[in-house]
Length: 126
Image (cartoon, rainbow, N blue to C red; front, top):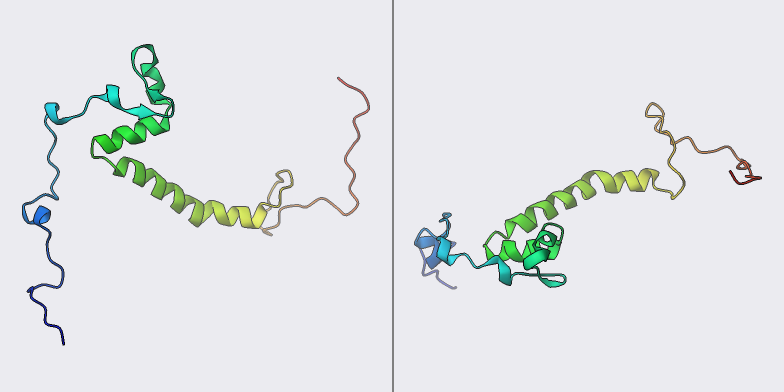
């Protein structure tokens, strides 16, 4: 039988032994310049600086450079939870590809059109 050499089941890594899990704000000289961050179409410098606000890849790369990966993972997690816990079931229940209809929440039916229903034909352009 194998014998454990540590007193605890999970060892603390050297980073955590030194208190590395605590947040230490970086010094200004340690922050990389934003001019080197690349987005979908390269680095946005000069007159293209405002494109940084709409380029998701640039924002994600900048978050990684600053050590803020949770800026990417947190919205992704919440979007997944919303889709898995709510929107996915709504699509499964009412998402038959037909135009939206008024849902009667008392009977939980979506008000399908009657059998043999024909849409009114458009006879002239407006």
